[in-house]
Structure formats: structure tokens, C-alpha cells
Image (tube, rainbow, N blue to C red; front, top):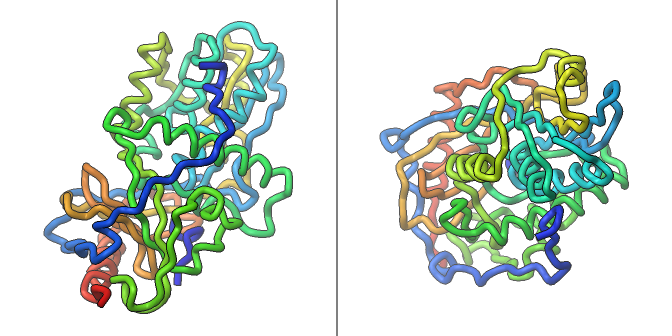
Length: 363
């Protein structure tokens, strides 16, 4: 069985250290939710994205680049949306104190946009440099589940990195909560996972989901085996990134579409402080050999308004979004081709169809 890791007002808008809020579980999903109609004739689009995966975890650190200060913020694996606000806060806390003048942010995905917005909130003029803008970024392809999954390898990370990660996760969790609603297309959705996932990733669910519930076989509709159910947020990534870019521009941000071939190209920018949020691009730009692509393929089905839950299991994962039902399940390490493969898409649909065929309403 797959685990979640393999699946799945001040300078930084200071949010108070308070008890994390998790809403009540949906009573509709607590009984017998309807199954997804996983049928090939309901597919409205297929996509493939490359996760910027580092076994040693994301990079947030500062260094000198000639006369410039360079702050890295990349390598989030399958947790780019989830950790975007948190690692961007870590990055801006490294770079902004004591800095005077304009700021450059390189990369316009979820991480780059969050970094740019935090710098603007701190009062700095920001120029965003990117070779692609939404909707053409890798972040646009992300499923949008706010769960830290597939972003490091156990045994490859340091205690110092774990401390960074927990700090980042805490801030992201709080930041997304205050953005819930139609404006950023973020909403809470009850989510079902195999019970084994409860102990993935250092028991993060226990820390952020006090309403987590456990169900034995026969108490849930997902076939055999124990399951857990918890609440988390989901982002309709296209609308979210469009709104983030609009916010950036409305706050006076400048956008320059261009690519960078070498660190010397970055050093030639007029800004004394540069944030590197290039994701997988840091493999070539900064020679990070530890950064590797992990391809994830998705089939998007016609929306099913009655689907008010999400799940993951041996057949992959399903996220309901206003723009369609997201079906996924591939984790292809070392694949650089960001093209959806028809045979893999067919396997994804067939797997979710098996899940639906095995639906068992609790007695």
C-alpha cells in the first residue's frame, strides 16, 4: 500500500501563536459518500508535472553572489503549495532584515509568489523575474492538497532541517487558514487515508488535526483495511495563482519574463537582494545534483458537486475541486519528460474505477 509520502500586518503578517483550528468533519462524508465516476469519457484534460524533489529536503539558506545577497528557497518535492508560505517566510527572514532597496524574486510558482508577497508586505519594492508565468508554471499542475507529502527521504535530513520544516509547516498552515474562501479558491475537505499514513512524516496529523478519526474495516466505504479521516485545505491552483499574481501587481510589483543561464546572470541584476525560487531549475542554474524530477500525472474529470471528500490509497489519490475531479497516482523519479502518457492515464482511471466498484457502505 502506498503511503502519503510516496503519493502525496507586520513584515511577515505575524500570526499569533495559538491553538490550530480544525473544523468539524462533514456529516455527509461520515456516513456513506457517493463514489467517484472514474470513466474515460468524463476526462476533460490530462497533465503531467515535475516535482522538484530533494532526498535531503528543501533548501532555505543565504549566500553571497559577488556583491549580492542570494537567498535560496527551492526543492519542495510534492509539498510546494503546502510549504510555500512557510519556507518563504524563512527565506524573507534571512534576507530582509537590514536590507535597504529593491528586491528581486526569481520564479513565479507558488513559492516565488509567496516570497514576493511577503517582501511586499514588509514594505519592499519587488521585481519578479520568471521564464514562465501562471498558468504556465509547474505549480499550476499541482493537485493543491495542503498536506506535506513526498518532499524528503527518511534518514537523509538533519535535525536542523526538521526544525526548519516544522516552523515552515506551522506558518503555512496558519496562513492558508486566513485565506480560505472563494477569493483564493481554498476550502476545507474531509480526507480519507489508509491508517498507516497516520504515522507518516513524524505524526504531523496529530499536531494539526485534533479532529482526526479512525475507522476499522466495515466502518468506511473503501474496502478492507483500517482508514483514518481528517480535515485539510485544498487549493484550486489555477485560480489561486492567478489571484496571487494579481495581488502582486496590485501592490506595485513589476514582472519581467526572462530566463537565467548562469549565476552570473543573476549577479548582473540591479537588485542587491535576490531570492532564488526556481524549483527544479536550480538543478542546472546552481548545479544542485541532489535535485531530481519526480513526474506526477493527473487525469481531471468533469466536476461532481456531490463529491465532498478526498481520499488516497493503493490505487492513487482523488481530490475534488471546483474545476474538476483530480485523479492521480504516479511518482516517477528521474523522469524529465513533462508529458502525460496515455497508458499511464488509463491505468490511473482504471485504478480509481476499481475503488468505486469496491465501494461498501457501512452497515
